Length: 202
Image (cartoon, rainbow, N blue to C red; front, side, top):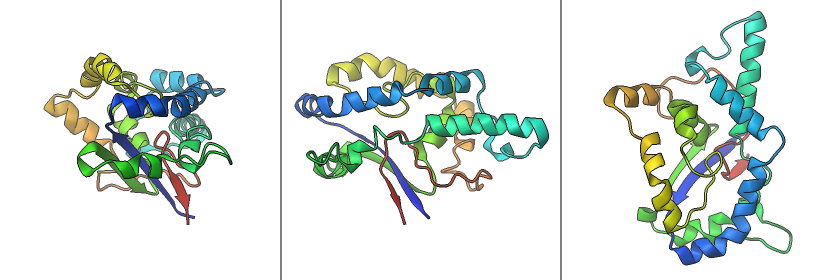
């Protein structure tokens, strides 16, 4: 089985954001309020993961503890059942999909998209920047819907999250396995992350 994931950020006027809000904001809130969601987030903040090249290397008790931490991070950054409705349809009576009803309406200058085969863009991004910076990103685990006023309000925090010295940037890029030549040792199968991204199997 193969999986394809995509994480996208698009720009829209407040009229469209207002139309999307009743559909999307409850789904994002539902993901944040899922049992264990906050516990997984807090664990990652307490125990940031080490260099991804070392994952699964230890044996015995340390390996079991690492596996639990990696599994928790995997679940935290997975595409949950609520967010997945943004792409699969909200209900049998409402076939709304971000793919056709939003993404198809924007041009290349108004959309950022990272599509990965058998990998998860948001998961790699969060690991690379670490939990303290990730906490400054609005929304929940890569999912957000912001008005223009909220963009202005959250911009300083986002700039702090993404403001790197040359050394910090190099360190973060080294931990982004989607852009490094090294193949990640961990084998994540049957999951799709990227915080509210479409998934397909084939």
